[in-house]
Image 1 (cartoon, one colour):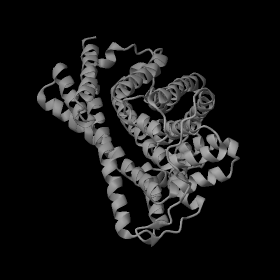
Image 2 (tube, rainbow, N blue to C red):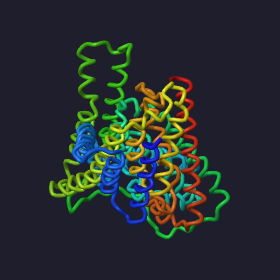
Image 3 (spheres, rainbow, N blue to C red):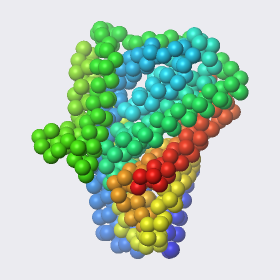
Image 4 (spheres, rainbow, N blue to C red):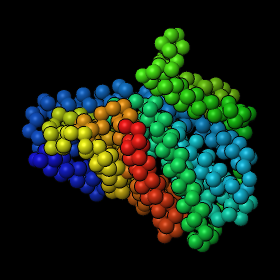
Length: 447
């Protein structure tokens, strides 16, 4: 129990220095790792060794994946691909159903693109549709924000769940498949809340007069926008390859063990699958000036660098925890699994609510629970994947005033704080609760 108390105190310190003194998570996680090491009685050499090993091991499996996934997202954002996808879906659905279309669009876009960026890119569509249909802007805003949010916390190659899968050592393909199964209904819950609360809230006035448009020029160079499927392929193909690899490795070996099986094992490796996605997005942007593409790549690597460092710091923290005997304080008869999933959910929710960032909450919580999975009875690949998703469900509960996403949604949708809390924040609470209930149900039915 002394170990449990030490780690609990260290978590309070981690939250305090991150919120009170605005210390970047990379530094707060490493400093907390050192503090835990000293309090547990490790010598200085061991502390440094555990931190270095945890940092390096985590990044060896996840660093390139995050960089490649971020590159695909930045190129989709910059070359107009996100709006191509949005317009195609909107053109396939009636005006009255356009809010659910925005929910679906948000879900698809957020798999490679951060939810904050995705909302900013698509907010003009919300405003235009609100004017054309007469449906309140708040309904479109929450439908879009919750669709984006669901994929953001559940579906790799979004960095948060991708990093958690690496820290917990879960199969990324399985996390992706189960993540989709959980995230789709969670996104729809957000839409239903938007439709419900939108009827009760006053109309929020549209401040700007943006219209739907797809850029056709880039720094003076004509950019002929590719078709919907060509635009979607760099996002879709890696997901398909990763999923097929997981299916191929199922104990029954549905594709046999021949050449096709070995090919899937190679191209379904997340690094290879996402590299192929990067090559496709480069091909789709071949008419963009080279200097412009170089700037996009620099932005992608800069954005991914911060995520990679936070992920590595989370892995260092987790490795120090693994070196302790915290697992001995937890029942190990396998009957504690339900509480294990709930603990993962509640801890992530606490960290999310306290410091605002879903990605930081996911990575930190994954580092904390990774050494405990055996004690929780969550040891199979299926259970590890559910643990990643339980962390994700907690990390979306709730988005409020200390979360940058809250302000993006409210400010780009002409909502005051009270309206945003009643609509967006309540929607994320419902999404998190529904998400963890679904995850627990999946465990009860199939584990």
